Image (tube, rainbow, N blue to C red; front, top):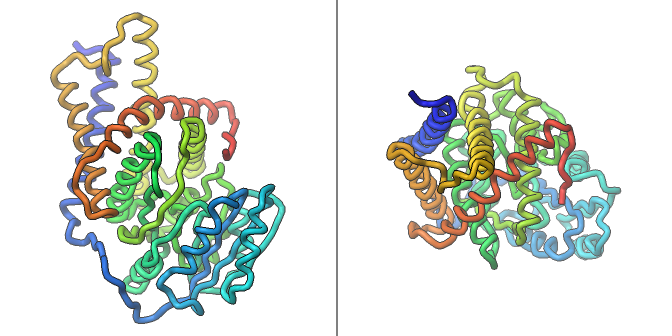
Length: 394
């Protein structure tokens, strides 16, 4: 008779396999809908768009960020760019001030209040029907905006469109690990888009109809994950969010274990606490796959990794350590199946971004880095939630 611990282990394995298979089935059902455009496209109409670049101590990256916006294949008289210095202590203000000469750029300087406050300052001055953000450490592909706007043109019910975010120039094993992870993220985001269940509208160039903020209010601090909270709020009010797989945005990433740990701790802490804030939508059919699939999947993932983390600790203390603590053929098969499906998701994501199906060493780095670190930042996020202490931004 299986022990309670073994029963929990198999239940968690089952749900992990189910999620990966569900994504794969979703892909197979919708594969013909995935549009990867290589050529330039034209819209019937070019609506005016405001893009805010919130900056805090980004003197080394913001110049390239703004240049990428100026290079967008979009009519300059239809694109307004707001550069907001959120109380930087370096030369960010000096860098962005040099762009004030452009007719479609406005620069703002304010006391430090957080990214959400910088975005809300932009919202206060925006008078266009569309509104978006580009993080000051990210760079937009020239065709990204017009491809995003094509989604709004074809469907008037779409309220926000998220891009495909990928890694800009990884230069060490931590960067290469994240590159593989971001490929998987592109794949997952598209599958969640097919399911109507996207839970994050990322800072790098998600574009909204401004009606979203007119109806639902401005950004909230939301545990320094304002891009997650606004997506939760939209899902709660049945506002449609889509993903544009060929709208590429390249982002700088943490280059050290310490910085990666802080970033992911903030993300997981934000997920846990935003989910607690919106717990009333959980398992409610009227909120669709967002409440029946996306949020439960995140919760099960945290529970699974947390359980395995404590199992590892117990086994080490009990001096019976063995690799993955798997001692039955069925469990070995399930774990290998999960890993195989994760690799498949990375390959599909890489195809969407690069048109390349080949496996790479990035995937090996991913499994090494994230298998070792993810349990630690997840457990710390849970602990800090319990004691009510939010992690630092950086």
